[in-house]
Image 1 (cartoon, one colour):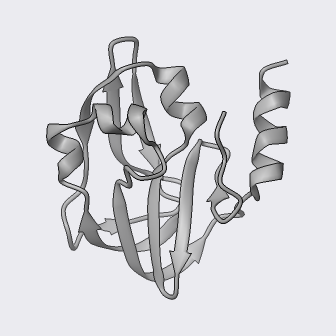
Image 2: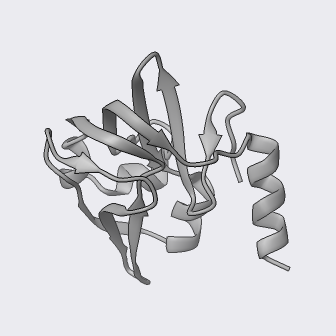
Length: 126
């Protein structure tokens, strides 16, 4: 399981990178490996509102479908439309294959460091 120390993580297996008032959100390496080969991604539109703890999109693999949850409340300022045509890029490079960028953030869930997330995953697998 690859983790990046500069990112924060959620218990629902999303990663978040904050740069000023912009949050970039994607799916963790652990999540993509558990799901298997991704074949479809459903994302919101620019200008849509996302709410902390609520699904903003979903991914489908050959094994299962899974919601993707927002770790923040705010407005979608960018959508990675390349994922719509190439969902497999999430499997190939999960930390490059961001889903959305969010601005106007008004609420943020408690986020985990890389170490805390790794411990959470290990405990959930026991």
